[in-house]
Image (cartoon, rainbow, N blue to C red; front, side):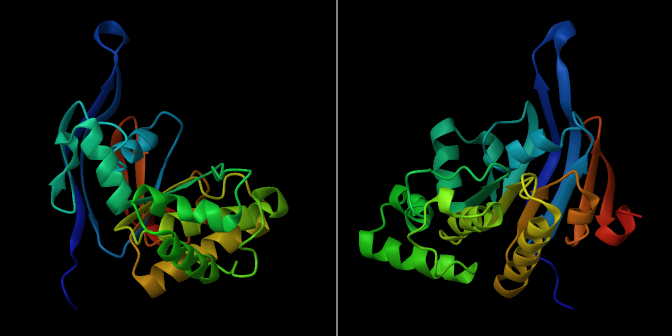
Amino acid sequence: MPAKTPLLTTIDLHKVYGSGDTAVHALRGVNLTLFEGEFVAVMGASGSGKSTFMSLLGALDRPSRGECWLLGIDIARLTRDQRALFRRHYLGFVFQSFNLLSRMTALENVELPLIYRGESRRVRREKAAMTLDLVGLGDRLGHTPAQLSGGQQQRVAIARALVTEPDLILADEPTGNLDSARSAEVMELLVKLQHHRKLSIVMVTHERDMAAYTHRVIWFSDGVVERDGPAAEVLK
């Protein structure tokens, strides 16, 4: 088998909020390597550090100390503006609350990241339409979020994350606002997309049945990685 290609490596990653007696140590020396094409679930109790970890992976914040190498760049050392540019070009985000603009159509919502990248109107329309078709919404281009079910809205959000062809997709509780049937549909879509497009996906979830769809589970506890391994083993 060919060797796996590292996508992301963290070295002694720490994050402390506040100082002195009130300091909160959210991460306490996390060392991890994620590989291209992996579908990874990040789990743990509230306050375990999983959300802080995802924030650092997404270049939304900087660690207190340590390194976070993504695509050969230590994003821990980037300035605020450099992190924004990095997110725009290399990352895709899927949120629990969908974060769609209510007055825009599905097509217009998916176009947004391409506008920020300076794509022409024709190119972004073509790419957005193709990506919506990829997630099964080719017949819903002109529908606003209010005209779509929760599951369909999340599909639009996934299309928006995919349209820039990012190197890594970060999904924060992507099924948290959906019922069990719609949750399963979204997870099956992510699995299908990951397999056929060789996507790298890191997903925060507190639901074990959703994590079971992934390849690997990283379990946080008190700011450290307590367990890390194949989903079937970690979720026993």
